[in-house]
Amino acid sequence: MPGVRPLTLVVLGLRTYPVNSRRLKHPENSAEDRFFAAASSRAVYLRDLASPADGTAIPMSDAMLATGLDSRHLPLRGTYNVRDLGGYLVAGGRVTCWRTLLRADALHRLDGAAHAVLGAIGVRTVVDLRSSEEVQRAPDQLSGLSLRFLHRPLYAPRTPMATVPRRTLAETYLSLIDERPQALVGVVRELAAPDALPAIVHCTAGKDRTGMVVALVLSAIGVDHDVIVEDFEATRRFLDGAFREELARASAERGISADRIEDMLSMDPALIVGFLRRVYETFGDAATFLSHYGMTDEELERLRAGLLTERRDEGDDLRPS
Image 1 (cartoon, rainbow, N blue to C red):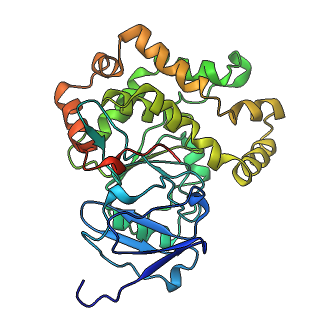
Image 2 (cartoon, rainbow, N blue to C red):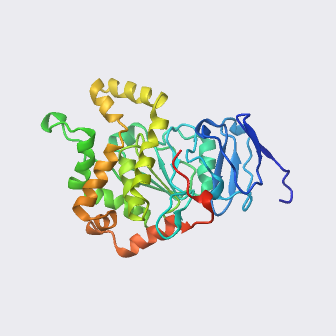
Image 3 (cartoon, rainbow, N blue to C red):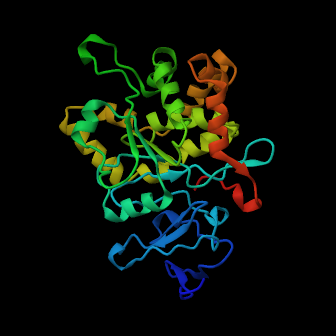
């Protein structure tokens, strides 16, 4: 590229890769690597988030496309669980687009370096699934970004706990299908709106509320059931350790019991399996569920068109990491 010196990436000292490679191979422990590669159809930027003051965004339009990213985790400062939903195969040889739909935990601690990455990706919409109380306590830090912020609480407004029976997390998943289907479908319809993508869907952990919305989206556009479950289970890798300790401490301060905290932190794949089973058994498939609660055929086709692209090579279909 004229005016840009050849560069080399060093990934934790394991191996070096020229940045103009067609495919960027990534070691299995990439979630902890000190680099970030943000790819889109418009441009690609390489940035070391560990020292943002020293990193400069380098546009490399065709130097490295989405087919080369083996890591789904976007290590944005202030987050634990931001992941890309690109690279999943669907019937007919198509694949989900990279850097088009991201799932995430809370975004209340984003800094300037994280903003630069989201700007490079071209994020247009952020959908926050948290309650009003959660948003007030830890509002998303998105100032300076040109995007739409949509607050779409997925759970019903809080009811005094003494007046309702306690639900397990599995029961909570099923209750959204039975009692709050319009809320679920409404979020998916927001993602299908013209110019909504690229988008981020998030809650506090990026696990339950986000997981249910993502499962519906992926199922509706044709991603295999087992892959959807794997995507859900990949959360386990990023929410152990520091996140678990932080959430447990904050929950305890609010008087939540230790056993309830453990239930909240469950990452059992049976949760999303049970959720999807209820959808399939009741409606046949996710697309029919969405349609039953108001999503139009036009919206569903726009969602598919926005999230799917033709598969270029075998590197396009990558499992969650």
